[in-house]
Length: 420
Image 1 (cartoon, helix red, strand yellow):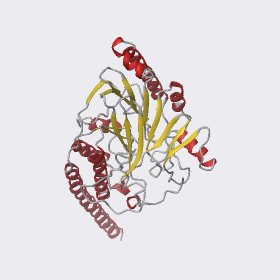
Image 2 (tube, helix red, strand yellow; image 1 turned 90 degrees about the horizontal axis):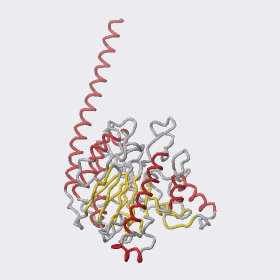
Image 3 (tube, one colour; image 1 turned 90 degrees about the vertical axis):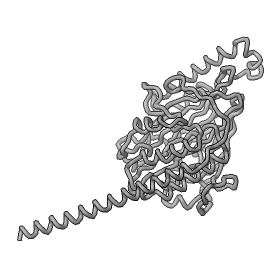
Image 4 (cartoon, one colour; image 1 turned 60 degrees about the vertical axis):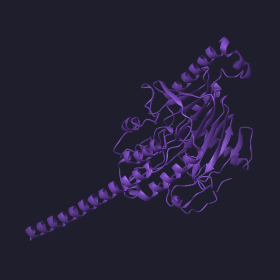
């Protein structure tokens, strides 16, 4: 009897293992074929025709972008490429949306504020986060636009195949990608500054990308929404970079050759800057709560710019600890604008204590259940930087007529986001 039971157990085990092996084999084949099809789709778009830019990697974490005409920047966020067999159709939709917006707008530079990849296996069908990263990178290289990434929490999950070091090294092989690790003594990957420099050597604006890290406090898989904050050595790096840029401009501006420029731009020594990161600062929550508690009306601290807050619960989901990044921005009087992603249904912009805090519209078709059927939250942020560094920006929805897709757009419901 024992022998019969043993043989029966072995047979059942063998059958289960065979089923599992067959499932893995079939899904692997589907993933490979589907991923290649999406990569071919990424290669099918035409390159964007815009003026050539000269870019220079000055040192670890510092880039110069040379332009006398200013710069057109597009912020994308939460593209959420799954890269697996379960996300093939939604990945294709995301490729189409991004290509349509970039082709129409012709930005000089694209900054993605995190979550390029979304390797969550029960939605993407893979643990391979490089697959999603590759889809985006291949698309951007085809379009021929300079780009970089400020990492999000999903780009390198605890269970993903590849860490931030691996994905950064992978991105570096693409000629139009300006993503680099950044300074060795600063926590995270992609802490960088992109200085817009005129031909006279003056920096008119600096664009900072900052790694907002991932989960903390034992929340290894992100089930409790416990997010990290900006670390002290990142804030110190930001401070020192601001000071170095101001010193640079003072030396350039007070030379005899730039005297006329200084007369027309008397505040140019104080280089204006913008910060891009994934997880919102705590001040996003403080500002929005103060605005709501005042009956959706401006206060002494908060002035509403535009947009809605569509997230439920706490509405804004920042890091769980305190940091003094915002206070440092106020102290240095350089940064006038911060751009983030992370909360896909929030697209509001407010000015809080003199600094604009803005969510970009997201791209996500995958992460939120049913979000591929909704459209009010999907798009990008356009940031136009004038030749003197002044900044204007706007939220742009993907379903506008100006974004003509090479492939047909999906039908969506333009839902009403719940908050004013």
